[in-house]
Image (cartoon, rainbow, N blue to C red):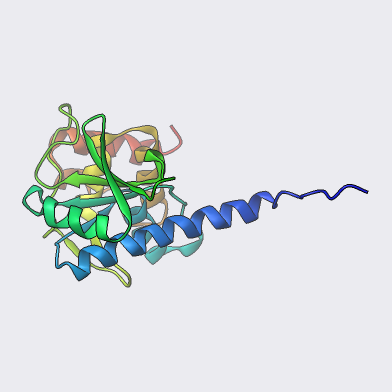
Length: 196
């Protein structure tokens, strides 16, 4: 009888993928912390941190790591990440770090520069790393800054992240008035119609 290799169940693959992202995040922030480079975790991992504080069961997985850096700190950050085994590259004007030789752009460490617009159409620039706070394992962007970043990008995944934050009570009807008008309008649309 032939020896058959059985593929792991879907949940096992998912769990392994989640652990890889967590490991990549831990290694990246450890390298930056050890090099005394100011940073803040943004993107899906920041959303997971904030949502998890309100309701662990509502946390979504993400496949990449987004790190906010000041442009002036990029070279020391790059040196620290390369020393930790990451490989720097630039794809479509985005600085990122692949996780070793076999690393892929879609699951790399992506850099967002503080005070700059990620896209020319963004209404406001990215926040500064000072607009962050300590979490258990890393420095995370403050909730108001994260909401602004998600409203700026406003892609489908950003809207889903915002709805997650609304659903667990992190963001409510008091928020739109405290945002730049166009961002407040976007948030109000989600608050009024979270299901699309």
